[in-house]
Length: 148
Image 1 (cartoon, rainbow, N blue to C red):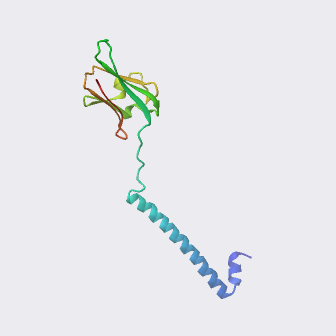
Image 2 (image 1 turned 30 degrees about the vertical axis):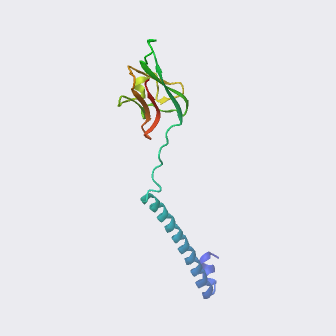
Image 3 (image 1 turned 180 degrees about the horizontal axis):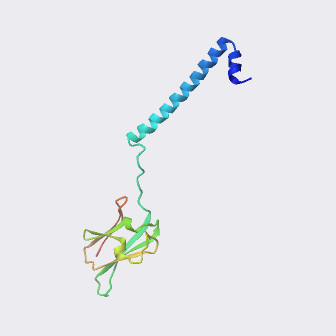
C-alpha cells in the first residue's frame, strides 16, 4: 500500500492534523530561507560583506646610505629586504624627490616578487633627499630614509 492510499485510509480528523502540521513545517522552512536571504543581501547593501581590505606585507625593509667615494658624502642609498613577507615587485614603489618608480627600476635582478636578500640601489642621491618605499596596494609605508 502506497503513501497516498495510507493517507486516504486515515480518519478525516487525522488527515487535517497531518495537513496542518506539514503546512506549518513548510511555512517555517520558507521563513528561515527568507530570513537568511534578507541577512545576506542586507549585509552587502550595508557594506558589511564588502571586499576584504588588503594588509601591508610584514617585511623588514632597511634603507642605508653608501659613501661610494670614501669622501664622507652619501652618493647612493641601498634598500634591502632583510626578512618577513615577500611581495609583488610591481606593488611597491620607491619615491625619491617626489618621483615614484617601481622597485624594478633600481633592482634589475628582481623577479616577479621581492624576497629576502633583494636589494634596490638608488644612485645620485643628495643630502636631505627623502627615500620612501611604499606598498601601493595598501598605500602603506614600508620604510622612509633621509639622506644625511
